[in-house]
Amino acid sequence: MNDLYTTNTSQIVMYSTEYCSDCYRAKAFFEANHVDFLQVGLEGNEEATQFVMRLNNGYRSVPTIIFPDGSVLVEPSWEQLREKIIPK
Image (cartoon, rainbow, N blue to C red; front, side, top):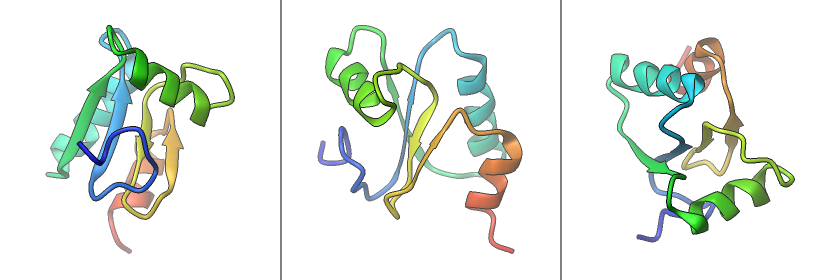
């Protein structure tokens, strides 16, 4: 898929892990606001893990969320997601 491992995506892509509470919160935000996104797990996915680490200066920080405008949010709060997604 062309939307993986790039900051030039056609949709929101969220890199996450199964054990991450911040990932659960971001997913809940997207679902509550009916926002389509592609979730990519890092478990067993070395390419995704390396991509996230490149974006985050060597850290495996999740969720790392890529937006179609090329922007990236890492471990965002509900408020940061709301400001990014919901127009004023």
